[in-house]
Length: 314
Image (cartoon, rainbow, N blue to C red; front, side, top):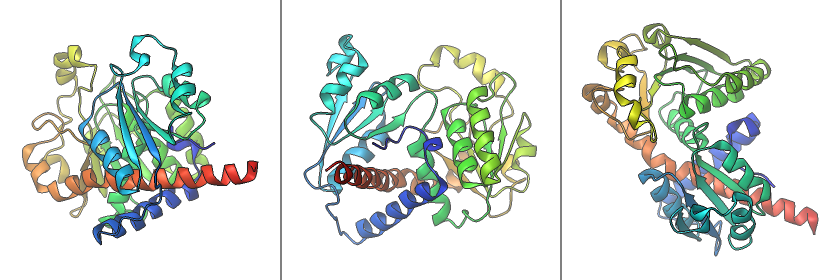
């Protein structure tokens, strides 16, 4: 059984296969051709963390693939009343064909996948956000930034940064990470990424200077400084992240045709300026739309792998 828990679980070829599927399905969607790749299948969507883009993109995506999505918040299922994750997995995976989970701890996701009889997709955890990185790479391709790109990540060493590390390490491109002191990436995840980078030839560097990270790069990206669950740290974080706003002054150090990516929601005046956001709004909202298409590619790929597994068993 193949799950989609972190990009570290896949080869470069597998990642590009999913991206190619996303491109194909997006082209079909734009032509109003809705091919029922997952006809009559059900996607269970478990949300312990709420989200606009994740719910709309997965629910719309499975519908366009010919299936149906079930929204399950922690208030709607026994998981929210203390049922063990492994029991929830054993029950739900006997009733649906695929599960997407958006939760806090990566360990919860991994436990669910361990006991699940169907593919499980990471819709976001505190450690990784891999569906967003598939989205971002699809967007990079569409804007001509996929060939030997230099990417600069400016901001918090969080789940988005970790996922950028995995994408760069697997695909073999250059990634420069600039974070404030005390807000660096998780050391264990960095070690894993650097091990993958040795195999792919990726160049990954870390520092505390946004200007050095952005100089001559093709793509600049960031994320909110105050993620869900960190609201009580807001004032401390805003002070720590002074100087890390992506504005026109910082973007001037990148290549003239560099693009800016943001997974949204964006807080103008904090991690990105209003001017920079609006200047790159076409890229940003193409990126937002691509959550729909990238995730359809992931779902169809996982379903195909599951079908191969079932054929082998039979």
